[in-house]
Amino acid sequence: MRKDEPRPPREYVPGAPIRPVAELARWLDDVAAAEPRRCVRLPVVLLWKGGDRQWIGDAFVAATVDAIAADVPALRLNDAALGISLVDRLRHACPSGQPGCALWLDGYVGAPADDDPRALHRFAVVAVGDGVDVAGGDQLCAYSAIESASS
Image (cartoon, rainbow, N blue to C red; front, side, top):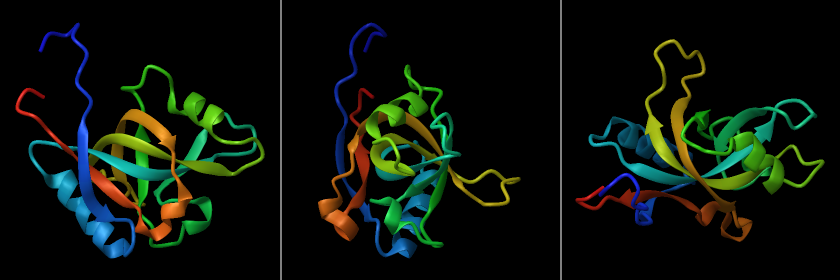
């Protein structure tokens, strides 16, 4: 594939359900350790840091802001691969006055950094999808990409 050719869309298959959390956490650990790295699609709740909608605070693998609990996996996001920052995309996707919202994010999971006191999985975001349809609730799952031989 040449650089100027568009990349074909990735196909995804169900990975782990977002509930129970222990199963999701094991799956994230497995994906982070896998070689070669696999792109995944996660339902991620992004919370604003402060009230001015200028910075993203915390990010959690969950379907809604109300679904965040102490045991829900949190992520340390990196949006360097995006042409338009995640903050700008979140600002357009989230209604004003909300503490944050849930979006489907595609990216690569990395193990927590050794010096990270919160032990957050790193997540390199490569694409931002639609808002999470909360009708699925706890039935939602994380997805793993099917990588073709040419990827």
